Length: 417
Ligand code: TRP
Image (cartoon, rainbow, N blue to C red):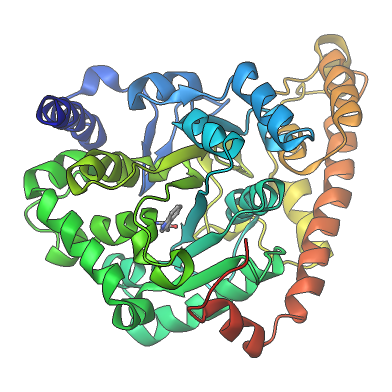
């Protein structure tokens, strides 16, 4: 059974790799490109996430499962769920069932520290993870893949370590509970916890070069560090990688909130888990925060005019939005009044979906803008106010994160849950 399944996975992975490489499958050039290193779409509305669900073989976060979740946690689900920003999952129903039966699970997410300043797009999975941690009252582990960034980027080990620390401060500033959260850097944790490394090599023995080539598109000239890395991102999915948190228990499953581009790592993990007699991780996938200049790409740290950083001043935020935020409005005011604006491609409206909590106001903006009564300038003005507040509040909280607090979060210890 497992063999048949893993053959199937091989086959699918190969298909995917072909699409990732693009060359053989020119016919598919209308398809969006989504992998851990590239996210691009030909459409102004961005990636077609429904198509992606089919291509990746995951499941839509539909009303049924969201309603079930609301009943269990006795509150409205996060606006990221209500608005389809987190849009897909794997095995979430199994996690909800465990919660209902009062059986434990834990959360796992991570960040590759490749720049010292985070941008708004980086906030999304962490804002959501924080909310789930609170709603379900569960432990959370956060992996900082400084090793990954060393292998992929032209950075020294010292630099990746510095970036890790800076990024950890930003993550802590998002409001995680120190009693329930363990943050670790791969470079330091691998030497501290033999059980983590043991899981890594278990995964490494179970995946062939052929399979990672298929899943990630690695080639013969990629360094061997890259080829071995996916096992390092896989291992924290297993509770036995954190013996001091889970008392050495192997059978506590994880739920991984992440952006959909990280799914290949966890398809691989879910494939090997049964062979290691370990539970498969469950997943919840988010869409991407579009770049300022349009949803064909996601916000990216390497393009300052396309991104809003958590270190930007109120003025920088204002200027970037006014100058660069792609407008779905008419070419002239008259034309806009006559035909209305297109919220699906308007970046200011799209950002409001992520950052405006008030559902009623958002709906009002949508109807007013679509009808042409509201102009792009009006939308931008409201968005600027919201983002200035989000960023300023983050900066305030970050100032209070001391080296000692970082140390606390990063010390292996028992968590309360
Ligand atoms: N590879 C991710 C990145 O580059 C970091 C990461 C590690 C991660 N483990 C994860 C992301 C688990 C989501 C979930 O940012």
